[in-house]
Amino acid sequence: MLFEMTLMQFDAHQFNQASTFLGPFCFSMFIILVVFICMSMFIAIINDNFRRAKESVRHNNNEDIISFMIKKFQYWTGMKKVTEEEILEERNIQMRSEYYDPIESFPDKIDQLLNALNQIYITQTMEKPRRIKETTF
Image 1 (spheres, rainbow, N blue to C red):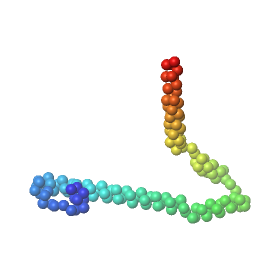
Image 2 (image 1 turned 120 degrees about the horizontal axis):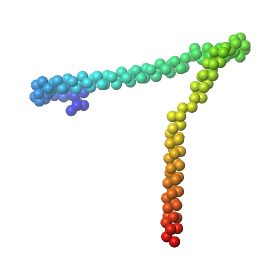
Image 3 (image 1 turned 90 degrees about the vertical axis):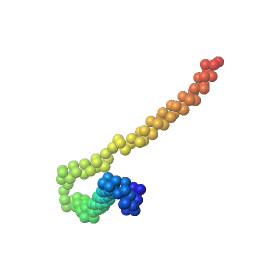
Image 4 (image 1 turned 120 degrees about the vertical axis):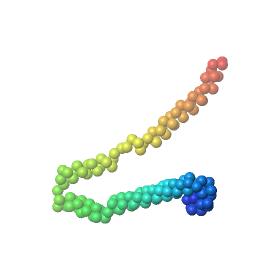
């Protein structure tokens, strides 16, 4: 019934027969909330995709690539000298690219832990019958 109401396929006379005030009021509130939630989701999806497209355009800017190539050529030919600030900037970029995030290796560490626990459990279950045989003799 609620899904049919969102598609506007319902009998309005049933609401009036149930309660003259409460039926239409609840129906109106439901429709307003559903429309508000659906519109919010729609706007959020559009906004997220727009942000992603904007970031991809920003990262693939041809002017940045050309200016980078010209700058590197000028350094290579000696037409432009490297400043201390540019050296620090390149070091920062290199350090950011080599940054090790411990969260990224967390699943691997958990797998190693589970494998170690599994090996301990298997060795204990294999040694258990041996211990029982040794104690019975």
